[in-house]
Length: 204
Image 1: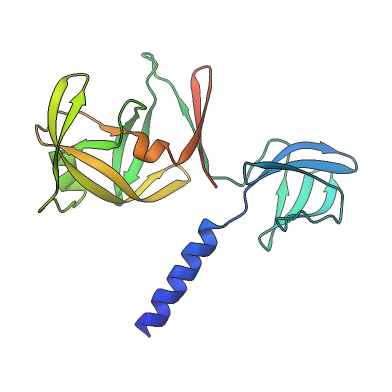
Image 2 (image 1 turned 30 degrees about the horizontal axis):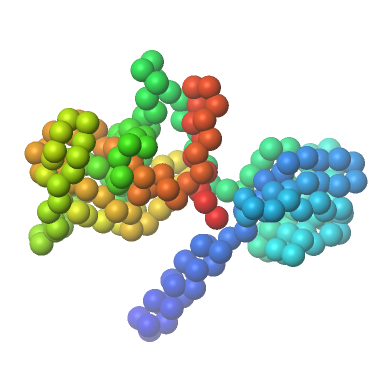
C-alpha cells in the first residue's frame, strides 16, 4: 500500500512539473495568439488544437475559452496560467516580500548578488533545518569573508510560486538580519523589472 501511495505521489508530481503554461498575447474576433510554455507562439482559431494540446473552444465577450491539460479556462488578454508574483520596491529600491519556507512565514529580500538563499543560524533553527554534518564553506560577501554551512530547504513558497529542495547557506556568525532570496531560487523563475515593480514567474 505504501509503495502504491508513493507511486501515485510521484505521478502527481511529474504531471504537475509537466503542466502546460499559456499566456494570451492577443485576442481577435476569429483568432487568439498564445505564448505556450514560454517558448513558442501559437495562433489558434475556434476548434484548433496546438501541438502541445491546447484547444481554443470559443472566443466571446469574456475572452477566450481554452482547454489546457484537460481543464477549461476562461482567459483574457494578458492573462497567464504560469505561477507568478508581483513585488513593489520600497523607498530604497529593495524588493521585500513575505515567503513561506519549510512551512514557516519569513520575511525575505530579493538579492541577485547572493548565490543561494541565505539565512542566519537562528532562522535555520526555526525552520527545523538539520545542520549535523553540514559542509562548512567560506563565502565572500559585501561585508567580507564569512563562514557558512550548506543546507537544503524542503519548500520555498513566494506567492503562487512553490519550489522544492532549494539550496541554501546558513551564516555561522548569525549576522543576517533578513533572509536573502538568492539565485538558487531566482534561477528557477523569470524576472521582469518595470519601474518600481518586479514580476517573478515560475519557469516551465
